[in-house]
Length: 85
Image (cartoon, rainbow, N blue to C red):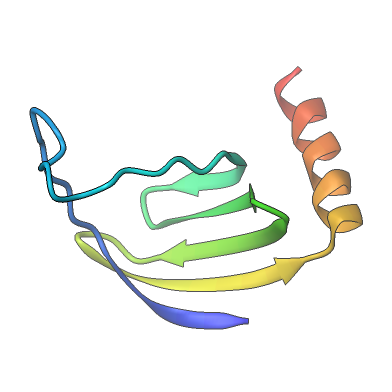
């Protein structure tokens, strides 16, 4: 389990600076809950699975990330699909 602060920063670029090499990573995610005060999401990144809880508002928020097994992620993903169907 990882705890920390998320500092939201966004930058608008017309193109990637030449000295930086870009890379792509496929992410699959779904939100279990979103409110004005926080969110809960599940995410698959590479071969890893996470449940992330963010709380607070503004540009700095508390964040807790918990590792999931593939089976746990799959079960939650099925439940999310039922909620939005």
